[in-house]
Amino acid sequence: MKGSTYKRCGCRDTTGKALGKACPKLRRGRGDWSPHHGAWHYQIELPATTTGKRRPLRAGSFANQTEAEVELNRVRDALALADASDPAELAAVGDLIEASVRTGQKAPTTEQVRRMLFLGRDSASMPTTGQWLAEWLAGRKGLEPGTARSYEGHLRLYLVPHLGTVRLDKLRVGHLDAMFDAITERNDQITTFRASRDEAKRALVRGMRPVGPATMQRIRATLRVALNTAIKQRLIDFNAASHVELPSARSPKALVWTAERVKRWKNTGTVASPVMVWTPAQTGAFLDHAAAADDPLYALYHLVAHIGLRRGEACGLHWADLDLDAGQVTVRWQITQLGWATQLRTPKTASSEHSIAIDAGTIAVLRAHRLRQRKHRLAAGQAWTDTGLVFTTAIGAALHPADVTGHFQHLGRQAGLPPIRLHDLRHGAATLALAAGVDMKTVQEMLRHSSYKVTADTYASVLPEIATAAAEKTAAIIPRRVLPVAEGRIAG
Image 1: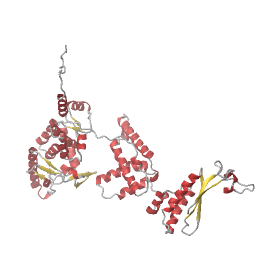
Image 2 (image 1 turned 60 degrees about the horizontal axis):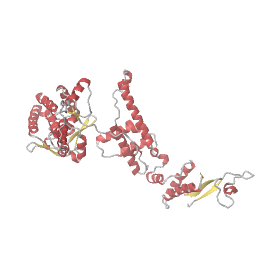
Image 3 (image 1 turned 90 degrees about the vertical axis):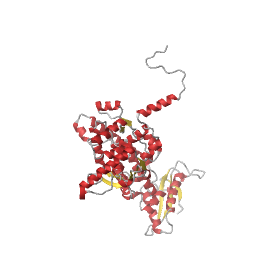
Image 4 (image 1 turned 45 degrees about the vertical axis):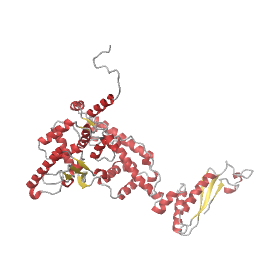
């Protein structure tokens, strides 16, 4: 199976017989090959078929001998992967090479031969991107429910509709660029139709939301993980998702509801940022309103506002994880929401499991809440469900996180306060701690962020009082011999 290269042409003699390799024009007078006549080919004996039939292979035409040698070497390399002692395997590789060359394609690469030998997949049975994504997702075991739901949504809404028909090994960066361009065009259409005076256009996009940069990054990340798995299985050798360029997905900075922002909101309905934080006075007004109304969830909102628990962590807090004598809360559980269904789970990361100190006022609020819950238990009698949770319904059942959010927004409107999300009450706890002089490292530990950088980046914009104090401290260290001119005073 060594093979060789040769040169031939299409000339014929006077009888019409093809001259082939015998054409005198193929060589010059000195005996070397003519660069202007004929084309290069290669020949090699492929392994016999399963029936024992010989099959010499000849292929061309190539512009020069080097190209013919390169292609011959591809065939040799492909044949070398087969087990020489296994006639069936040799025949299978020969079939693959023969099928490729006979249809005008290049000889298969070693990667394609490996896929055929070890995975039972040749180029003819290579899955489409859509088929591979479905196979990949079905094979992912032990995914968090939220992660699985996110992957499924990315496949169903974006990846399969745009890329599903492309053969997996043919997927390129250009396909992804076209997909994200189409998503961006759809975003523009949604924005335009929403602002239109034409009710029919507004109806077409009702309930639709533009796909933001962060979601695009997550869509790409899903595809990148799926393609990395395909690379590990040697189906492909290039991950297009790793090379596509997308706008950066910057997290919105938390902004405080200053008097000017509140005024603008009241006049125009404009909210300055997706993440808004109440001032200490506004937070106090909200808690006072909930306490005065004897609201059953007052203690939950008080706890979130003071130590920054996440919504699911507050809903999943157990009395066994509270030490009111020592003033400690330990986060061990959370209630997660998947669609409308809920599930009690441990925190996603080890850093989320942490003990947090609580102040005397919060301890008093929780003691009062425990007494209230005991009264509910007595009133419910046999209907009481003993979940061990700190915050429950009137019969002891777990709270639904969405209900906790909806009730929070209702109380905020009742109190006449500018809108924030319940999660922004967690942001507010961090901002208030910084305003009180607590260092960033301690705030990181309270929020249980995985790194100091996450905390610092999130709370770079803090209460105006902090920024003003920092500016005054900076100015104070600059030595001056001439004082700045006071406002209204003319230097003479």
